[in-house]
Amino acid sequence: MVKDATEDEKVIRDTFEKGKGVFRLFPAFVPRRFGKAGHRLKLHPDDYFAFGMARGSITERWFASTIAAQNGELAKADEGMAYVCVDYNSDEKFSLRTAVKVLGEEIVGNELMEKYNGWPMYSKFFDNENPLFHHLHLTFEDAARVGKLGKPECYYFPKQLNNYFGEANYTYFGFDPDVDPEEIKERIRHFADDDTRITDLSRAYRIQLGTGWYTPAGVIHAPASVLTYEPQWNSDVNSVYENIVSGEVYPPEMLNEECPPEDNGVDAVFKLLDWDKNVDPYYKKHYFRPPVVEVENEQYTQKWITYANPYIAAKELTVNPGQTVVIQDGAAYGCIFVQGHGKFGVYDAEAATLLHFGQQSTDEFFVSEKAAVEGITITNESKVEPLVVLKHFGPNCPGVPQEV
Image 1 (cartoon, rainbow, N blue to C red):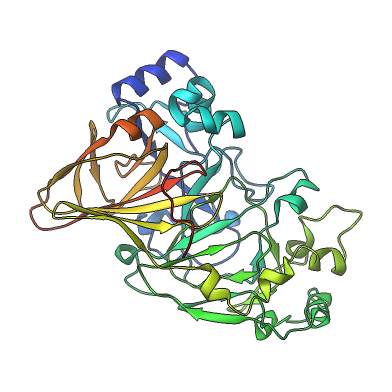
Image 2 (tube, helix red, strand yellow):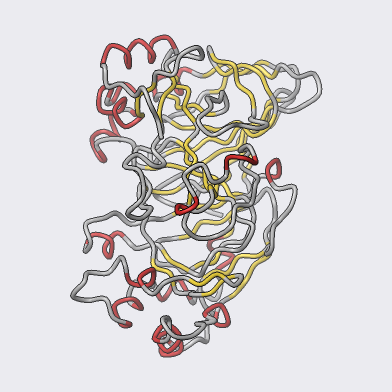
């Protein structure tokens, strides 16, 4: 997918210094073999099958990722990984993963290097015209059995990218509190030969733009057909309990592909569920995330949009027209601009309007811990339109609200 990638330490350090501790990232579009593209990723209409028809349409864009998508046997080895653009006038690039190896705590800080030996999260936009299947992401304990990491994740629904809601403007979470475990097992027992209709046993919540949810690992969910900003842990593992969605049929291996081969029957799949969280009678009270204002003044507004979990955090920053601000954050972060144009540190910054696959952009960045702490100067060069950026952090961001 990416040509002219280098691992030259001098090029990496020179780019880091030239950007004053900020990297500009290359768009990382990801296809999926399931679902239908929602066409809200700002990707050119001709390019949604850029990976070939066998790979399916492009339904995701990944941000600040140092891992590759788990995307089948035909997937490229670096699919979804973030690359750093060396210059606007050059095709030369290097991976963010390599940059973290070279720069270490210079880029992500001492705490993340000591605890995780790198950058432990990423974010994405997922964008489907149809709702996703009812599925879960493994807990850390269950993922360790197959040599992988668990995947807690968060959702936020940006108004700027949702001019329509697709087929379904609601998300299913968990199961009804009065559901018996045997009802679930009976449904998945017939995954290979009949429609499981697993969402009959679940609860749906209508999407409210400008809000979000925290989804713990082990909680089953069927996301709405709404473009979703999704900060999450460094993992891409799931178990699919729903075999037919919008007429599309999903193969049996998607049910138990994350179980050890010697223990992958119905009981093993069922045990992937964190049962108490799935049948929590106060699910919305515990996991719905309305935005929490951190700062609001004449120049800008900054809100927490992902919070109250031990893994990941995110903010939405809105700089008012014509304003220049210096924004300080206590940890390294990745970010994506979703509205407006202006300056972000030494770089031009503008929300994408229409990108060809393989084209550079100037809407995505990665900010080192030192640069974040010292503060990034941001200018909104529009006289009328806000400049809006979404920022994703790891588990060491200070000041994150711990309660809803």
